[in-house]
Length: 261
Length: 298
Ligand SMILES: [Fe+2]
Image (cartoon, rainbow over all chains, first blue to last red; front, side, top):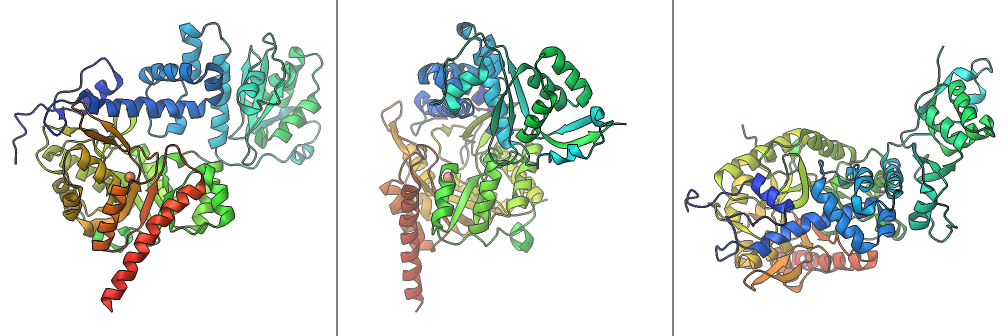
């Protein structure tokens, strides 16, 4: 057996640092069959790390990828992966910081809606992988006495998420990912909010009007129906509580109902 | 304290996966597989793809599991890592084992996490005493937590560590002896590593501790060149199994008899019939050998 003491030792810290820093030298002590340091061989690992993580990011954010184009996304993903490598081996949870990263990325300041498109795609993924649960049966609400109706609170369904944006986030996401053939003209001055649900296996995205968005947001956060309806009314004069509430229930936003006394 | 998991029936690897060919399960193939009732020995999944709480991935896996034997293959536990195993991740693996009761359960001789970073690659370990002790401790912990025997897969490597003091074969053999784990013999990895380090793949396979092998992997690799222009093969899983790997597979099966054999095709994934055809090619070799051995026995 050879003695290991005369050979340079490579630990995980130096191996890992060199993986994420393409400027750094190949750690001494990693060799080819001739015993010589082998940068091209080490670069196989570097490449695997960056490419596989960039691909994982592209699978989570296909809409952002389409908006930016293959080459730009590749360069952007490399910057993101280097700055925010994953903290967990479960890559379906990789990319939580991507929306904020896009908002703060100086070269993309002319496209301020990108972050919200990423938020919508992230919420879609959370809904896809959320725990399965039966949505609340709307008939349950009919069993509540009219005097108590205002005190009703809802348990959010595990897959229910909302994204509110100053930008037409759904129109942009729809055109670049979900329904590219159906999409019409996009008015960049139109703020949009969406509710994302998965009552069974299909993820659904619903565009909400201002009053409906306020109501849904408050109800998902556990406010009473009376409080949520009051705020929605302030937000949107044409707001109809019965329409918005039945839309929410039909979408599968809630999994349970609570009566606070 | 090292326990001999081979003597404990409760910890023995499940017998449900037959000595036939299987394929890595891809979401895009599930509808085809279920509609056609594909004739295939088993499916293998990457555990990390099923660590969400619910949704379509679990619904699909449940449907496949009801019809086919399953092999659960972890890719992110970092058994070769310098730091303690991620307890949360080990719990997730253990939960998946309980939920799906796979016939086989495997992980890699590699590391993929250090400090707080997960690198998403199977990174190489030095073959020295300190690493051996750590890997054995980690495998003991896995087998105790999950409550069953695991298979450890031999790696594809592109560099060697100057600090290594033993061969990969001695390293693997010692792990098996100390922990009682089984081995997953990836014959493409053997071909890739032996080519990359200028060793003979047939010599390596002739000396491999076959008694511990519970499963075989076959996959495609990409050819490249290293700094000095020598062949450098990359374990890409992006194409058909190479002719040289088929030959090694035939030799291994001829000498040792049939074993559960997985076709790995994870990148540039083809249509289901193409992947199924690769599995059928492996099945023919497994069946021939089984037939020849039966004749010999008569
Ligand atoms: Fe493998």
